[in-house]
Length: 498
Figure 1 (cartoon, rainbow, N blue to C red):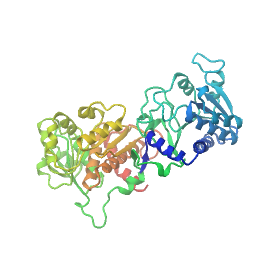
Figure 2: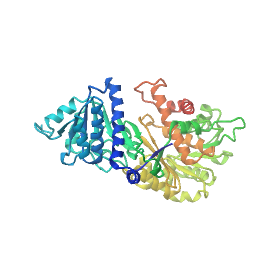
Figure 3: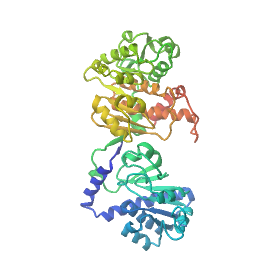
Figure 4: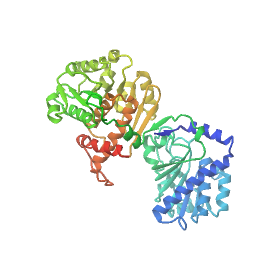
């Protein structure tokens, strides 16, 4: 499991390191990592480092200093290097001196021959002929989008970009972008991943993220966020052993759909089947349709007749009237772990007294998208982690906030983040599939927080496999939820083989 630390946590660890290691030495370690990974990317894209040209976009402070020291190292490896200074009076003095000693060239962004955008002729030339650009414009302390001159310079870049610590213009805490920002091919960050590398637009704009070891190690506290690795999910996914039977493998109850709209029931129940549940019991008015599609499901017409289950997945398509309310009340009174989605969330928002039916200590998972979250607690806002944490704490639930980056918050403050590089699950019915997946994992007795993380990871991978046809094409095709559902076994097999 990968850790993610806030800028404040990283800075505190750095202060501890600086107390025993001179700060310039730590900076040199960081810059060497940027240079090494930049050289690797140059070799991959152009075949060499020597004889190629690297342009540094240099802002004020240590972030610009890292770029300048990295430029000095690349110059020693035979690359031509030009630093474009966006704040000449605030450029890092030692880094600037190192670059000049190595034979690097230094120009000002708004130098002689400036065009209508305020970009000097030498700066324009440096950007246009670059084989690689290093973004050292702003660091972890910055907020807001790129300023006009920086934005214009970045817009003229056609070469691959390596970002130092984070892409400039991305909010370090939320990953949000409210204007021009760097779209990096590679980000070299120091000590540990930051929230902007896994949240919001920042997860995409960071490109590939490499963590450079600069000696923070033992000085880092418990991570603020966690990201599951495929190997974590594969190793932890429940599969039957020699002594298991259908009951020990988990029996999940599914309450979803209606006679008029049976699709939600078919998708949620099918997802639970595909997730290797020991048994799936469906309870609701779509029983005949579910039984015809999934003959292994034990289907009844009412939650009261469902029989013994170890968890419930409830909500998709049950309606928000009296009958839906009674279904939700019944599963809450069962004392079993519950994954509540879709109409269940609307019902909680309409009638908070439904919470009174919940048995003490029974786990509840809520899985809202942004609109459903707004009904529960108001607008999500740019800080999705803070919003999810607050509702998880307030309602004593595990809250899975859907989105391109899925945020999963436990009542005790733990947060899992599942960033995705694609949007294939953004299709009607895919949430019903996720509900069934979570319900199935809850039935095995898994920690609800981890169950949500495992389910979100497998769900995203299944969507990717379905969109790409399983053949690894670069461009996928739009999919429906049925295709996502069909790809779940392949996704689970892939994760288990990781």
